Length: 309
Image (tube, rainbow, N blue to C red; front, top):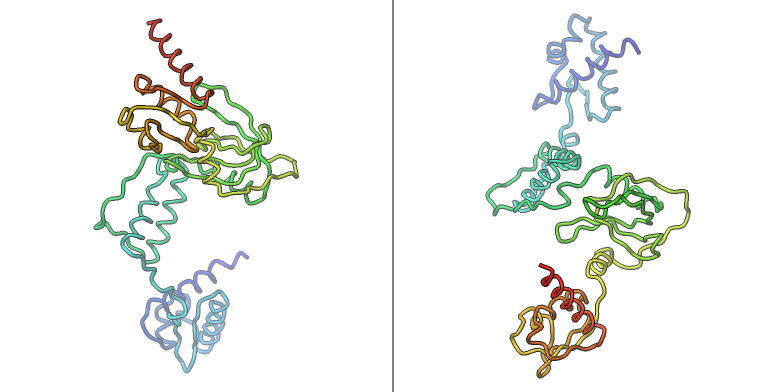
């Protein structure tokens, strides 16, 4: 092993010399260009060169030696240039900017560097793509790596979760299904073991991920984006609200007008309660009773808070 250095240097220099020429070269040309061959007796040089050509061929370099000539078959060695449309190259270039403030940026930048080295170019002539300040730009690579490892291995995981900046950290247990980006935020989605239900956790607030010894794993039964949308949307409801036309643009845009009332099907309950409460002076009736009760409770709470001031 101690003598490997000179051998590797000779093989490397031979490879570069052959790659650097545009046509087959004779033995004398090789001996004058590769210093490690200089001064050798001609027959000894020819034998050594033949062995070296076979060695670099085994290493994957398509070198050839025939009729007193030596060369590398570049068509079999050089990869064709990678071509992208202007839009594709711009998006790939933008990807290289993602996460520049966190460790995930190293992955993005290294990927673009390799593509650029292969011949891809980034166009700056197309319309500018806005770089949105979102979770994807700030995600920690370690979190992504650990979550995806659990997903691939179908492993139950435990992790620390910070529900809010000032809240106490919680220990949660989940069968993870993936990471979903929605509305500039990223969520770890899966089956919450403690709650016994689907849950989505803000990925930025997940840390200290480790696997458990459990062999049980709940599989996803529907698209993950649908899971996240339903969780963020919260409970939904059907309702009928008697309200004057044009009293609330928000209500009109989500409901179906039927005479003096708007009918709602499968709308977010919280949104409906808050929006109806904001249009209270123009509302003459609310069904069902539980939605009406929530609207009244919200208005009462708001009034009490105002009186305390």
